[in-house]
Image (cartoon, rainbow, N blue to C red; front, side):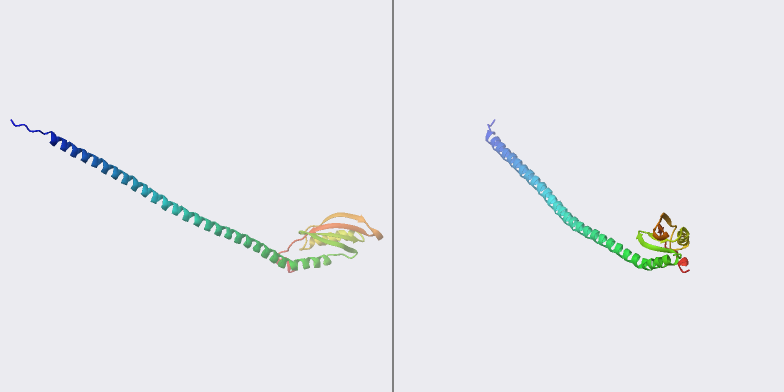
Amino acid sequence: MARINLRPWREERNAQLQKRFIGNIAAAAVLGALTVFGISYYYDMQMDRQQARNNYLRTEITRLDKKIAEIQELRRKRERLLERLNAIQELQGNRPVIVRNFDELVRVLPDGLYYRSLTRSGERINIDGLAEANDDVSMLMRSLDNSIWFGEPNLSRVVAADGGMRGFNLSVPLEKPKAEESGK
């Protein structure tokens, strides 16, 4: 039988297998590193993209907040203007009413009675005056109550004054008659 020495062939094969194994390990490490780098790069890109979206949203939110503040300011200005307009319209509408109230105060004034002062507080007129007799004050109160421009008067005091006169103080609420009543 011939003697064949397989040892160098085995060493060569083992060295070749070892090189292949090391090459495979190096390739797997490179592939693993590339995979980790690729995934890391992908997540970084996604985070950058999301950060850009967030920055865009913050910018838009800030811009919209400014617009909302402007709209609210415009609404406040509008409300103030509407209040002024309503006040002006009310004053314009009440101007003839005030004249009519003073005219009616003169119409209901009986003989022997004098007004010393007329003051208006809100929707009430306070009358301070002098009367020759208590009946004159009663007649004034009835006339005021019968008028469509005044409510029920409230007499607060009657006192004796100089020269046999009587001083009185009463208040009467103002009323706005309906259109069909004011034509009378």
